[in-house]
Length: 469
Image (tube, rainbow, N blue to C red; front, side, top):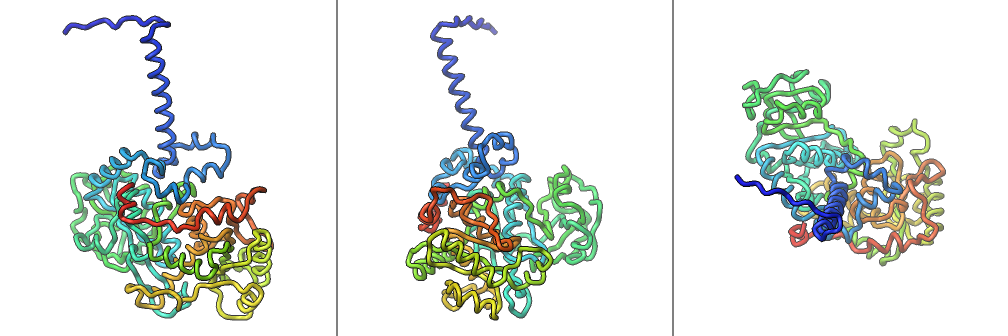
């Protein structure tokens, strides 16, 4: 083979100038790739150094939680390169077509904690290259002050899975069970947790032959999982994340995680939460309520957590609010924001304190009877879950929001405001005793319009929008 020597390039030659231009273009492109990577919900933890150079925490959240208008743009304008996003989705579908990750939370956790667990398992399934099997939503009667036992509804009846599938492949548990009821490994964080669902478990886990796809011991046991019964070949009581990262577990077709938790850094959760939205019917119901009740006038929203919190948080100073304290917070907030209207979401029982709040503030509340009953909501408990979802969206639409500290409902409202509606971080706070704790104070030049006016249009997702992602 004849090799031609590469000629030397003089410093002042046109070829040298071209090379410098190409080098500059390459540096610009590399910087752009870093920015796009930083905005990818699944790669945020790997860009910590880049984030530390940002000026403030609000700048970080503005990257992780884009506005409603930006979130409705194609994937390239939402922080993901369209070609890369398409390839990533195709790769996930092909590699995860026969590998599934199931999860279910502690049976005593409410809907909002189930949503929190979903966010962390979307990220986990993506890192493992598995399709995520979304559990049914577990409804607990004690959270609604109703008699009876727990009930289940499909996830897609409350949340829009079409949007979530733009981020990662998911399938609902009911659909998954039509073609598979056998699970290779069920992981529980402790023997006590496993005992609630299975007759026995092993710890540490047995060695798995990587050549086997689903057969481990040849003996299956029934395991209670999200209200159904799965046939599991090995029940392991050990830290699920440590077990699943073992090389010999990677080849298993189906893995289930019981008593799952939702531990995820806020910026990572917010980035994924952009793709976890309620159904269009819920957004439309909230829009109708706001339009009919406030006539498109700005309003503030309060979440006053009572119910079982009166006993559960009795030892935590500042969490519980009396009726007088709530009225004081509301009046100060309404005066500061110069609004006349207030919306109240609460689980307080009828009594003197609730009567005091209603008399002093005259807040608007969502009446269960005013909600149009969908076909799937056959019981009072299911209607209560629907009403709670609509209340979250109404609170997310408010010009300002004050929540109850440590409440998962208030947490869901804040995530909805930041991730879906794109509201500023300073437009919410927690009531703690006689004070309000905010991560950021209202800017001196801010007004109600700066937070309220940006989100008067409910974010909508149609099949046409989904195809643009």
